[in-house]
Amino acid sequence: MKSSKRDIRALTKEQLRDFFVANGDRAFRGNQVYEWLWSKSLHSFDEMTNLSKATREMLENNFVINHIKVDSMQKSNDGTIKNGIKLHDGLVVESVLIPTDKRTTACVSSQVGCSLNCKFCATARLKRMRNLNPDEIYDQVVAIDKQSRLYHQKKLTNIVFMGMGEPLMNYNNVLKAIDKITSDEGLGMSAKRITLSTSGVPKMIKKMADDEVKFNLAVSLHSAIDEVRTSIMPFNSTFPLEDLRESLEYWYAKTKRKVTYEYVVWGGINDTKKDIDALVQFCKYIPCKVNLIEYNSIDDPQFQQASESAINNYISNLEMNDIVVNVRRSRGKDIDAACGQLANKS
Ligand code: SAH
Image 1 (cartoon, rainbow, N blue to C red):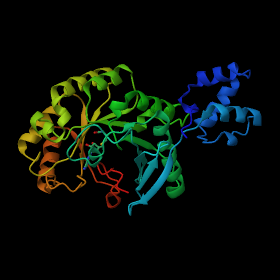
Image 2: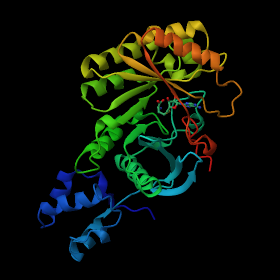
Image 3: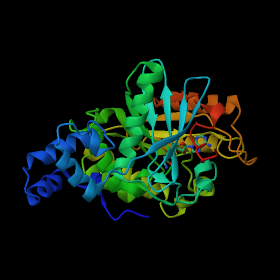
Image 4: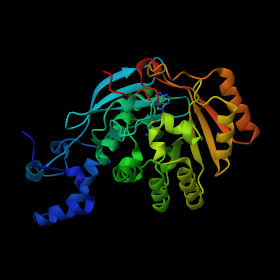
């Protein structure tokens, strides 16, 4: 039977305090419970040891604590761990732990499935089922931090919103989650270590700038030519590059923070000099850097990683124009945990 009790983590701290006052207790009790729920990440009222039995029962009668469960775990040879995460309603998303020498990164999902239809991305094959709630995003980070400590003896250092879904299409919940992740009442992580990756929703990029967010922005560009971009990322016809450019200029004017462009080079799609020139031109609009991402096959013959010489052409042309470019090797490919491979296969 579906519970009619409220999910307690949907309440703000103020609302929790009010709840206790309304029930004849002190507001302070709300702070205690809030701490158990967020910074201590407890999933049961019974473990809240500084509350009386009566209080715990009262909470039990009024609320549930919805939480995620790590349902499956696959370990890659390179230390990457892919998690199948079961949500309280049985739906599944994936989150990935990516350890490198200097950092340990959590790649988290923001939606179940995705509504965009990027032709090269495995997640696009899953219908968008729903947005994740703030606590479901937060819990992924907590779970991956635990794994990082357990398997790599290091705490989590970075978070990227590059799992399933388009974070700017679940903006409010993503922002609430980041607030909790960065707050001292949550995980106290620095916003500078968080990157939100978007396919580029201009209106929302401007909104983020207006909201003065402190995390980093990455845009999945893949082409700076409208026709090409629309052919591989169909929503580009609704949000063309000119609008994206304008929103990024707005972002930079307000935040003074560089944007990262993510870019995969495919043979026969975006590997000509014309494609390179367009990217170089696009990179001149605002300070930025380019991450050339290795393509992770999703078994579609149309998409093949470009030749090494095509990639080197990109690198030399970008560098000639003083644009910072990094080549990102994929991690966790052997377990389908790399960018664009998250599709709940198991
Ligand atoms: N919707 C967001 C975040 C999820 S995708 C976004 O579009 O940015 C995370 C990154 O993986 C994006 O840069 C995306 O373009 C890239 N990606 C998707 N499929 C890929 C694939 N098969 N190989 C390599 N990168 C891929």
